Image (cartoon, rainbow, N blue to C red; front, side, top):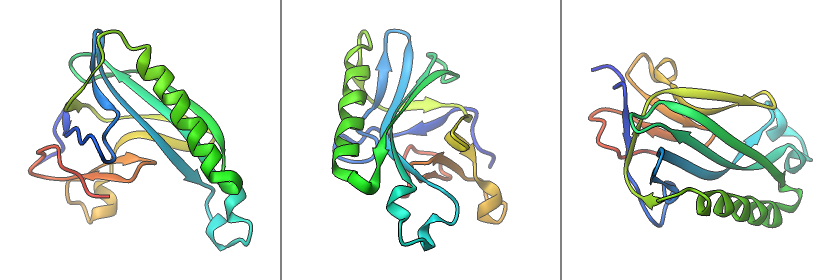
Length: 153
């Protein structure tokens, strides 16, 4: 079974997909997420290299990516404040979506690069010995057959 043209993603109000749904122009996926520079985990100052973002991806009604807002909120040097700023920005963006309803979505593969990091839903099959796998990055949400909207973290 191949990765479907539209990968279902289940809405979970108290977990990783609490900021997904539909609005008047299509679908959306929002999150507060972080990237880490390659090799930074071995440094004593790794917290300077973990960067927090507010992210809002938008899709048309058929699940094709239309655009993304990705905003750098700060590093893990002050992680609590960085995450708070990111969530506040994300909530502003979500509040501006006309007709917003939190719900399950189904979207196609896509990617956006910011600061040398990939954001999006990508084909991660290569990392799973060729088994069909889609990965929402940098959120680390993995989707696999039977493609029922459930994910692994």
